Amino acid sequence: GENVEQHPSTLSVQEGDSAVIKCTYSDSASNYFPWYKQELGKGPQLIIDIRSNVGEKKDQRIAVTLNKTAKHFSLHITETQPEDSAVYFCAASMSRSGGGADGLTFGKGTHLIIQP
Amino acid sequence: KAGVTQTPRYLIKTRGQQVTLSCSPISGHRSVSWYQQTPGQGLQFLFEYFSETQRNKGNFPGRFSGRQFSNSRSEMNVSTLELGDSALYLCASSLPKTGAPGEQYFGPGTRLTVT
Image (tube, rainbow over the protein chains, first blue to last red):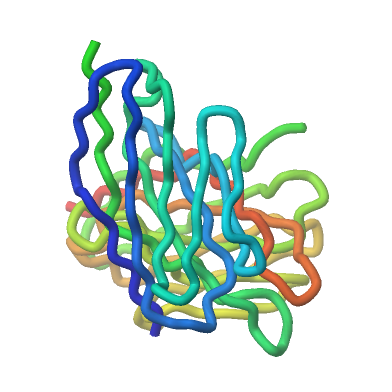
């Protein structure tokens, strides 16, 4: 089955600086890569996603890049703010021939700490 | 539009008992997936329901089961609870996309503690 590795497990950056989280996946059939933000006591919140036919996607301060050849994708947060502090998860999924998709396979998460 | 709702939010059960958790998806979403989140194993996929049928299943024992109703609401059941079943159980709903995975939106979860 699919395996997703995520690094680093903890990332501390100064407010205003950029943060980058990286993930690799094992199954070349995976074609959907979402990123989730989870705050304490809440469920994961979808913040951005990318599909395999796209190399990069941006939404305000957040961007995701995908390298299908190397099987890795990254989350970039610019101009970090205190409210960006949370645990971030990457995930991968693939379409099923009978319809729908395999369940999401998640990385182990990155605890992002924004230092004031 | 209201988000995914899960009930109850917290639950304490004893080993050997069974438990039923409930999930109401976002209005119009017909696919419901369940995940288990623990500190050791992280987020793991349990199963997915679409149009009242289990369409996909993760690698969990048969003690974990689920169902979906005609209004897309879903329940999951865990029988013969073990201490290791203590976890946050998350439900996610999505609009099915043709030939591609749909975006999944998560609820707040049900925190299950087994003593």
